[in-house]
Image (cartoon, rainbow, N blue to C red):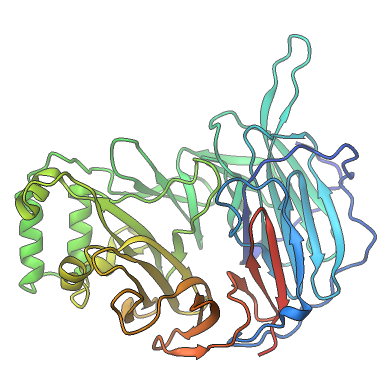
Length: 486
């Protein structure tokens, strides 16, 4: 731990924005010391435009994130007003995109780990003002008989001034491939995903507890995580953010050899109207389990856990058919990945309250028309809507739907491309009632209330926005930030 330049932080109030960037780098020869540049402080945030549907690409700024890993180009940067916060190699950077001016830069203490790269940042509002946390994989170099050792570093800085609040360096040898990132703050605990869970003290960065699970989401005083096994489903584990004490586990009892008749009985009960979709999905999870993509293997290219209304969170998951069941319903074909789903889960108990795949409006279409819903992605709009999209292989269309996370219910579902009435769309992000995407060579905005076209001349299809500026990702680490104009 590096104690210098440390000052206390008050308890965090809310998670404002997330930047998760993975990649590889070699440090610059003249790396800047952990002090901010003298370019000036960030300007107060401008008032956001809601919904954000028009963007001035002529006034845009293109920035470069160096040494990104494969698949990391579209990972979000953190935004506050017109300022973008991001990591690049061994540096945590703040850039005023309105004035196109670098505000400050902080660097790691140890050497950036170019062989096993990983870096990220997150912006959090606290009682003392906005704080940005940069997390990095670094290492010490071998010398004589002293071996090299792996480290995880976290830099906490005042987001406006760039003043260093604390800089923590911890030994971390557990996993060769992970991208360290702060997933949330609860009370005095900064929850860091470092392949496992590390809870850092908000005031100084010391490790207060750790857990084997991979943290995915912080909800109030609860940390939701996953434990993945190569030969079985992913199971969820919730722990107390202050102590690391286990609160519940879900799906841990999955066993593939359970009789397929049990699964068929569940489906029969559902089809006869004797069970709610969430009840069936929850019971079925104990029989064949669910998978989510582990983020330990390289860059975290998917966001799969989202807040979803009071006391709930959403999970983008998929599963494989049980071999015995598949032989009965599909003529003995080998089990394959057949559908994904979106689950609404109780944060208090881990029980499933809703499943898109078991929704009465969806189940027959998924089985008979779509041939599944695969490669699912979602974005929460920051209010009460979870927008999701995935591929329906049988009709070769993109299926997009919106869930009302307050009500825990499906709002609308539409097919795009293939034989559908509407042209194909490639969604990129969502914010406050708007879904962004590309269609027919241009950028469009859909209304999350009903799926209708909201704007057909948007000029860009952002992955993230705060209503002041919007971010669109290119290749090789480039990203473009444009002002929101309407």
